[in-house]
Length: 296
Length: 310
Image (cartoon, rainbow over all chains, first blue to last red; front, side, top):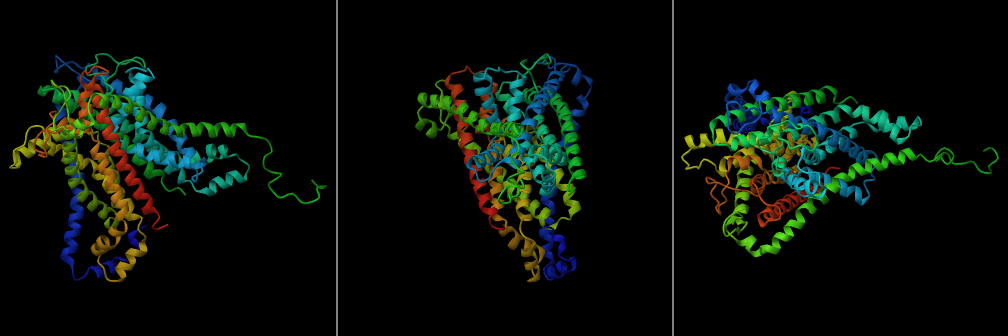
């Protein structure tokens, strides 16, 4: 696994005689990382620097307005996003974790249907997000008759992040050593008791990390909601699961498409909220993982 | 027990004391949760199929695949999908040209050069880059990358163009390429590296001539997955690449891809059941089938690759 097992002196000796090429290669490697990470820094910097002037209470106290950009805010988009994340968490996390338990603990890998489920999840993880918008538009909104409310949007996002939850939860469950299961079963616990009392508590940090990353993906996703027709300038907060809604990324998109410069400032300011939220969630996820990884 | 003529095998007495219905119910619930993913796929196919079939009843397949003008809203409407195909391919190609070299070099560094501590910092940071909402990246392409290119490059670029969109899509998929390629390279057994070092290879030669080829199939699978991701990227393209489809390979002009057309058409007002409405689903089918094939190829390569070292 680790390259570090090769003594540094041996590597240095092996590199002797061709130092320039070696150095150039290493510089190229580091440069590629610097470009990628520099781009990240540049994105954050440029958004903050152009949006900070408009980043004030108007943003979360006022409603979007097409006529008066200087008074416009994003309150309905913020509450819409909170609704979406809440409903997505309620739907996607239990489903994903239960599916992961099935695949890791119960599924017989030699059966064709279990292999189909597994391949299918891999494939769903790589389907473009906009396709989930089409699914929501064609099936959830029209055939199931759930309309175009915040619940339909949350269902689209739930299905979108479900593969992420499943894959992360499976990895966390797989990391629990079999000896723990065997010990529990040997003491007379049933399979479900073993899973519920031993395997799940041991894999909670990994599952939580995956859950946070999945929800942060749901927060930033705009494409399926746009297909679903998440409304542009909603002047009210959703008060129930069937109400029309807006969401931060959708609101940002519509502000970007406006030609007036004030709306671009507004978009940048709303992006600051979005990025701050996502960076906070990512940091928590990474902390959780680093803190509790490799307990066995 | 004592009177039985032969000793019972251990287990025949212990097991099956009474049926555990609770356990069966639990297993059924778990299976249903796993089947949600199958239902999702069926739902996607069902959502796409009917309007697509109806679309091809109204528009001939030959016109669809050979027409060079895309304008369902025109009078008369034009349903030639070639402009969308060329634009999607061009933007994907630009993204791949950006992401594959940078992503693979980053992966070599992380897998072969970086210390454990450096890796522990850089990998999560790359994940953050992958987690930036694409609408934000689109805004960045529109307000930073395009003005920069217009100012500092000799190219004659329109305000909305395929080039900046492609570049930013490429940066977006760097983390994907890097992490999948790094996984593949870390899976190469250490014995191969040590053998190469013992024969006098430098670290660069070991990385390029030993580790990289050994991990090649995994790397290719990762690159294909990244291509499929770029292929279906919506928000960056819809924001930065414009809305006028043209049959061109010139990335300095406006470009409309499959995904960006769907987003644009769906965010406007289109009457349900009209040909324009069905055209959205027909383009969606094209997008779905293409990414499905790419993902399938990638999964096949991964499966074959896995057998090598087990």
